[in-house]
Image (cartoon, rainbow, N blue to C red):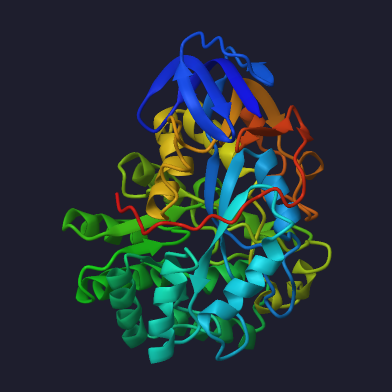
Length: 461
């Protein structure tokens, strides 16, 4: 099977140029001007941008949080991703039974994804507890399973304490892996949640108030220092939402620490005003960390531009508004945390970032494709356009305007957090391993065509 993409404006993290791309047997085999080879399919994309397929390194498919299960599984979730210009995801696995080993969830998630995913995928390991057996098992997960990153939570039921974080950082540094951390201060959040509930203050805005900016900032700073104590181990901070956290990251990177930060479209575009919407609409935005005051959005865009934030992911975790989210209508603490976004990421960051002048188009490719692939051991197989890379490409029409609405999207959930937002510039073709799987509004791929990708060790940038 061969595919020839003609007359595109090719964009990578470092270059922009006009040319053709020839894909054969799922790999990019030639890039040049006026390629005249025969191909099974030829697509002329003159006037359109051709970018590397999007890499979303923070999704939650099939996630069971006890009170609800995420509405997207590996079929519907990856289908939505593909329709939005994402060709690879790395999913954060959910917790397993108390006391389970690391491979337990790896095996469970392979069953979830195999024969379902429509694009390529991998998993982040999840750490629920630490003992010597877990530390030893990490080696086989990294080397045999090809999973070179693990996530630890500083809050929720299986929160990891500081002593165990030292052990995790040191072990993953030895193995060439990277530690990703959900940074929120558990004690202060618990105190504030209990206080508000006791006082009868249970509407959505109190979710925001119970998780102040300082709860993130303190935890970010603490992990930075613990990573340093642990031998300057690499640290990846998921879903950064505050200027305060960003300030700590800046200081750490300027003194030479290997700190990497991810933010999400919701923290760049939305703000805390969503929690005060009528008719319990604020429940749609109960996520952790919460949406913040508007000034944080501007600072996070600056952080991307200045290179302190390396990736934009989604934390896609969809629960239905009509059913799941209503568990919190009388008490915000009962509402499952999370929101959809895997399909909206590429058009939102292109429109709000590139078209509005917040970031360059090269920076857009860098944070949405190249950096996530590099940090998580997928590059240059993924995240770039070069000979030998997988034939994962997305064609963006810079003039196509779309008003985001649930009816136009493909996630198996009954709302979008970005309802009514007008975007300019939209993915019109998604190519995965040389196959056009989405074209002009229609998904053309097959269930189960996606492959599990064993990842290399972290390529620290």
